[in-house]
Amino acid sequence: MNWIDTHSHLTYPDYNDPIEDILDRSRAAGVTRWITVGTDIEHNRKAIDLAAGVEGMFAIVGIHPHHASEASNDDLALLAEQARKNKVVALGETGLDYHYTFSTKDRQLEVFRAQLTLAAERNLPVVIHSRDAFADTLAVLDEFAARLPRVVFHCHGGPVDQTQAILDRGWFASFTGIVTFKNGETARQAASIVPLDRMLLETDCPFISPEPVRHIRPCEPAMLVHTARKLAELKGLDPAAFADAVNHTSQSFFVLTI
Image 1: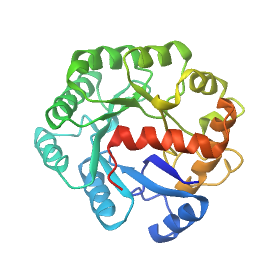
Image 2 (image 1 turned 90 degrees about the vertical axis):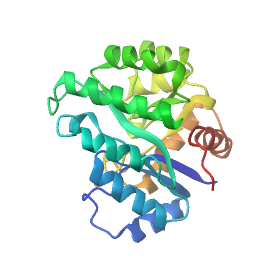
Image 3 (image 1 turned 60 degrees about the vertical axis):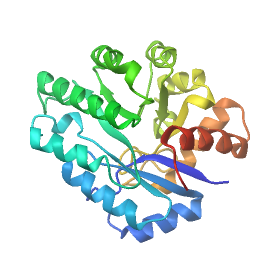
């Protein structure tokens, strides 16, 4: 029984151990494929380079809304080139974040639309970051919906009405260790209505260590198994059957070649 961590940030500086050790622990836990996600031009480059050297690893490239204000038009042109690289399987994470004010709303919207245009041109699926901005995120996505092949809301935590809006549009939801938290009932309710053919799993490491290892930092891909077991329990499925189903969804969504 193996798992795919569909959203990690393995190029971030939070890790104390070499990447080889982190991946060895991951493989030992049964997490044998990974997608490492860039959030700006430099981390995109690192994600592409890391994926190129590791069997079973893929990359996602994009400009996070936190970095929208610092992203120049030249950066957007560089992103278009990065999106062509081998083993790049999606564009993201992109979207809107009104919880923090690292970037203005206007610039976030501008950079978001630019990335959706690129995804449509490249026929790449899109990984969405949306925090305290669901209505605007949905409105922008609706502008592009007919042109985008697939859309997933990463680190989705509900509530159910937002989850239903995602599902009604044929999109996907990805769940993290939040579903294992004592105060994660809203996320569990959201997961309960997402069918397995629309569900992805992720750690979002180095963030969001799940229970029972929530006290351990940084989070790493090996910890995905705790989230997976909780979701299998929630769905009333044997973990092996659950793994088969969500792995199929992940592989189809990202068109993973290995």
